[in-house]
Length: 183
Image (cartoon, rainbow, N blue to C red; front, side):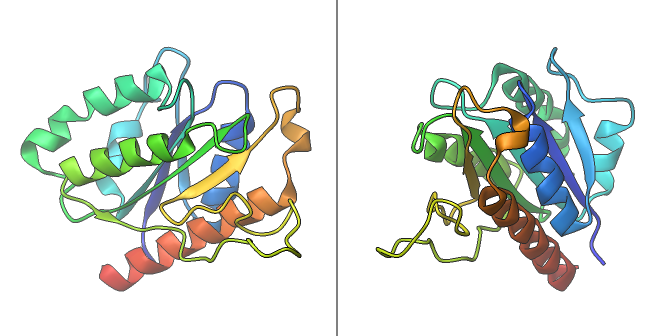
């Protein structure tokens, strides 16, 4: 079994709920970036010990939150020593609108993973894009690069759609399976 860590920032709880679904699927440990952009005690050690790092951030203004960016900038220490080289990486995001420039956030996470010389894993699932598709279907938002969810700006965390959360869970499961094969 691969060791998987989910490092994420959540501003209002929606990305936290998505992170929990990803972690459930991956059997992963959650590493929450706090409101000041810092990791909890032992967070860096958890990431160092992981075979796979799944990164998550809400999409704010077309990219990751500033708190996630602070974490990314602080990851220059493992970057310098290439201590995360050949780890499996993946990413997920959530925003209030259907598009919301979520792909820009996933591209940011991908670029960060590539700078760490990591191996990127996408969703591995087709999009629900037929006329019969329903908003609550798996991968309805239609991402291949990483998991995406959409939570209306006036929706509570409890109102997140089960289809988006199940997409996140299956995504986490896939990342863990790929990491286990590469161990």
